[in-house]
Image 1 (cartoon, rainbow, N blue to C red):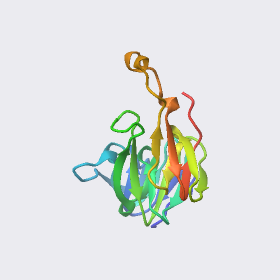
Image 2: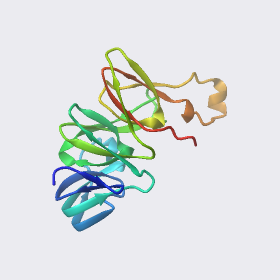
Image 3: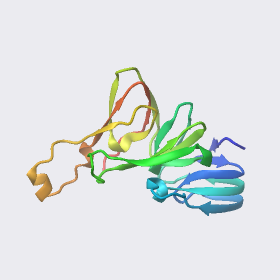
Length: 192
């Protein structure tokens, strides 16, 4: 089984080495050996790991019940925290996407995948938007799932002296700008 079967809120994969999210796979019929990602600088190491499965594995998350399978016809950049399962060979690298330049605050860990497929787990249904040449999409930070466009640029409102002296929650003002051509997958915003 080289493909994932999505059924009843779970992505089912067979024998092989899989790139899986934290606390995955949920259940394995057979044996499973978890392995950490190797490398010197691996930003997605806390979010993802490898699972060597000798049977059938089921991956699912109670907090993110909506599953979307994305075929990687072009290189896909996926938000690492929302990645559920993918073939280990699909992972080509990872990086931190900074909304505010040179700042780790509100940075998003992303994983780059190609030549395979990836299953994403989200809190709400996922929508696919195709962007034409020169078209711009502005998207809330928490709504981003995956994209095939050029790397997005971040936007945050001007920070005043009061924001530095009395920090307040500014995450709701963070946005990403995507530039076409390409495809962007998004989910609903989270009002917290």
